[in-house]
Length: 597
Image 1 (cartoon, rainbow, N blue to C red):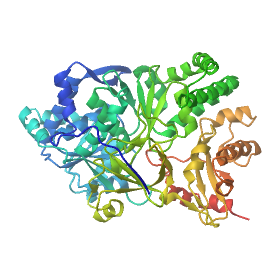
Image 2 (image 1 turned 90 degrees about the vertical axis):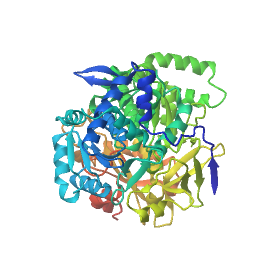
Image 3 (image 1 turned 30 degrees about the horizontal axis):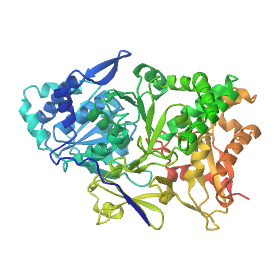
Image 4 (image 1 turned 120 degrees about the vertical axis):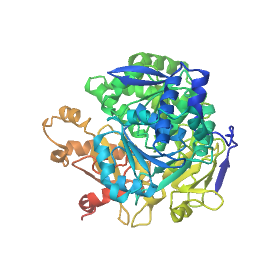
C-alpha cells in the first residue's frame, strides 16, 4: 500500500460560497469582459457588472416564485451562457442546482426529478419542457417550469421586480461552505444514476487549490470556450474557476462548428476529454496524407514528440531545435491556428490521454494538463500543474488531497473535495466512503517514485480470461483509438481463451480511406466489414496496440461493427465513456462469433 498527501495551499473561509466571486468581480472591476456571448454570429462581451446584475435579477425571480434556501432546481440545457447564468442565480438564491444532460431520456428525467425532490425546473427547449411534464406523475414536487428559449427567463425577471437587493444579500450570506450547491447524477455506466451531493466548500476547495498551479490559464488575460456539457462536473469546475479568476468564458454546444467558433473566440486554453484530442490529431494526420503531405506531417509528428521528450531531460539539442523551428512554420503553427491562434494550454480529464499524444501536443506548443477525478470528488483530485508535469500521468495529488493505492491496486482518495454522500442513499454511500473519509474510486492505478499517479484500469472492467489472466482493457483501447480509422473499440474476453475486440470505424475518416483504397464511394462500413484491405488497416492498428501489453493480454481477434457507438444508441455516456454492459448486450452475437470455432 502506498500513500501520498499534499498540504493545502488555500483554506476556504466558512462563510464563503460560489456566488461571492460574481459580486466581488462586479465591485472591483465592473467593466471587465467576464463573458463573450455569440449573438447573431458575432461574439459580444458581457461585463462583470452586467453578469452580476443579470444573476441578481434571476435570483430575485426565484425568491419571488417561492424558491426557499436548499430547494432543488433542475437545470436542463445545452452548454450556453444561459446555463451558467441560471446556475449562479440558483446559488445566489441559496438553492441547489440539479443538472440534467440535454440528451437525457424521459426515464432518466423522471428518475432525477423524483429522486432529487426538485421543486422546479429550468429547461432550454419545448422538447425538454415536454419531458419534464411527462415526468410529472413520478415527480410531483416539481411545481414550476421555466423555458429558456421561450419567455422563461423574462418571466423570472418580471416576477422579481419588486424584490429588494437586501433579500438577495440575505440569501447569499446565509449560504456557506457547508451548504449544498449541486446534486450531480453519475452517468450511469452501470445501474441507476446516483446523486452526488456536493457542497459550496467542495468546489471552492478544488478551485482554490488547483488555480495557483494553473495561474497561466486562470487569470484576467485568459479565456476559454466551453463545449463539453456543463451538466458534467468537469466543465462545471472550469466554469467556476473562470468566474472566480476573471478568465473570459464563452460557450458553444455546436461541436460540428467548433473550429469556426474557436477561430472567432480565440481562447487561450481549452477543456476537453481525450477523445477530442484524438480526433484533432487523427483528422490532421489524415488530411495531410490525403493532400500528399503525409511524409512532412509524419516527420513533424516525430519531431514534436522528440522535442517534448527532450524537455523532460537535458533539453533539446541544436539539431532538434532547428527541425522543430522549421516544422513550427510548416505544420505546428497551422494546427494552433485551427484552435484560434492563441491557445497555449489545455486541461484534459475523463480518461488517460496517453504519453504519445501528450508529447505530440506539447511539442506543437499546446501543453495538455491531464488530471484525474470523479463526480464524487468535485472533479479534480490529481492534476499536472505548471511546475510539476509528467506526461503519461494524471499528475500529483492536488494540495490538500491524499491518494492511497490499496493492496489490490484500487485508488483511494481523501480530502475536503469529497462529496457529502449519495443523495438519499446511505447504503450506496457506505459502499464507497469509509468511516475515516477514504473514497473508493473503483479505478486502478499506481503512484511512481515522484508522486505522480498513473491510471491502469477500472476495477469493475478487469477482464479475467479462461486462463486466469487479469487484463485492464483501457490500455489496449486507448492505443487502438489513436488510429485515424478507429472511432470506438471495446476489448472483450471474460472467461474466454483470449482477448477479442469490437471495433467501430470513424465516419469522418472512412470516405477518404475508401478513396485511397479504390472502394466504391457508396459502400458502407457494413458492406466492407470483411474487406481484406479494411481488415488489414485495422489489424495494423491492433498490432500497434498489442505492443503495449504482454502476449497473454494481446488482442487475438477483432470484429468490425457496421455502426458506430453513440450516445443516441445508448453505448456512450455524455462524456463519451463506454457503457460496457450495453455494448455486450447489443452486440452479443458479434462477441459470440469472435469465439466461434
